[in-house]
Image 1 (cartoon, one colour):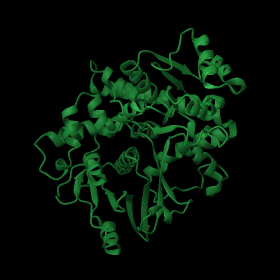
Image 2 (cartoon, rainbow, N blue to C red):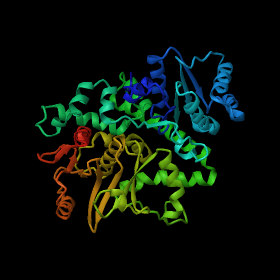
Image 3 (spheres, rainbow, N blue to C red):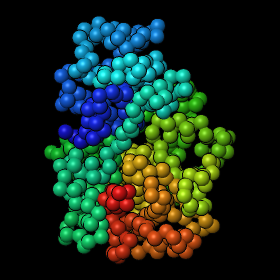
Image 4 (cartoon, rainbow, N blue to C red):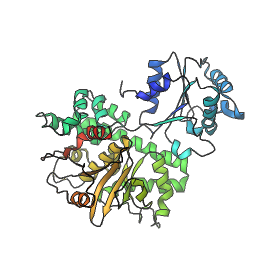
Length: 440
């Protein structure tokens, strides 16, 4: 199995009264595959319906049809009997049929015993108060594979298990383990965490590594075209052009290491936040971008100090970032080279993607010339500052300023590729184990 099934799938199935489950996330993160795998392993039969490809099934939801009538119509259309007490129903790309979304409310109220799972890649840009069954569904988000999940997918489970142990980040590394992790980390920075891309990497074992990664990059270009086609299909010609300009400007601005996203010249003739707010919201709701809000105070809750027109933006997947920006494969393989100028934002995007994957809202602290790349907070009202250093001998001057200003904050992380110091300097690859420890 490429990716382990989430534990919440099993708890949802075991509940005597369940709401329809919605799995949302960007296109190609593996939602459909997971749902089908779950159906194969756990159910007598699985009935799969795709609202994007099978336009004829939309008719089953006309005239405010109830659950029984809907299921009866779907049985006829698919020519397969559906047993609601034992079978799994999968509604894929459900955002393409607003009436199907609305029907989830009635499945919840009238048929809570139904095993109904849904997926949508553009749910965030389609949902409205009229169509969304508030309180009547169970929602989860799927993200690209994290680095540890990538290791498991490429059959390096033992390395993944070591990586997730918090003790790994503070004890002397076994000779060779850190070097191997760094090598695989550079591969991950090229492939990213989209399952289809990682599968391409795995399927190319007979070729040289470089040829395998070339195949990965070609597949990424195909996926980027798919994302851009979605923009054109769902946003209209003019709006889609603006969305695409914001999308393409994120890597450019990251490479310039701007402290915050600059609005001027992103869209010709536009230079204010109001001008890009619509395209930005589209990309955020589609799951293609991650936002880190800029704040100048570090008090709980961090969200109280947001200014909506000041933020940094990151790509949802570090591999897609490299493909959009056109970074040469060999340059990313040489990521440990101290002289690589662009690697700082690559590392920051990796950290942003990982924090997002673990459910944290992202904040960036700025005060005069000082900047902490990321602040996060947990349910114990603790704040964790995270610095990302591209050079091994970088001084954490901003962190010193921050800790002096907020002496009650004791814990912090300084992440770099291969730290030479102990204490709070950690390998960037160990971030998942650190987050698990800190969140517990």
